[in-house]
Amino acid sequence: MPDSTPRKLLFVCSQNRWRSLTAERLFDNHPRYQVRSAGTEPGARVRVTAGHLGWAEVVFVMERRHADILRQKFGEELAGKRIINLRIPDKFQFMDHILQDLLRERLREQLGEDVDAL
Image (cartoon, rainbow, N blue to C red):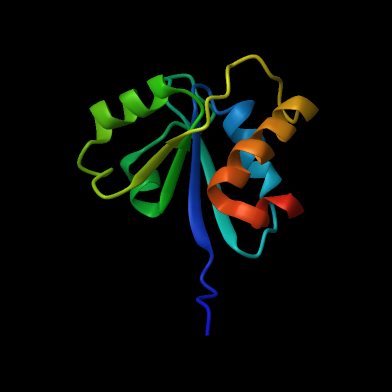
């Protein structure tokens, strides 16, 4: 019998206003995932904490610098966690259609067919 416990995904960008928040919204009501988002910068809408990282099974970052910041600040909390860089630049507004398509494309590589329903 397959495990029906939703996987916990965390999306991280700088300000948690456009990219990571869009990713979180794409997963609203998805039965196989619980999703949160946060930002690395002091002025972020929701700033990433050790609690976020402890909760998450997989951490997706938008740029390499986000992973670098997380490793620097939260090295211990990230032990054993996958950090995946989606390589999405900071040039999109919240829920931009191109951003949504990019997220689906990059996430399909990691999550497979589950992304097709987003």
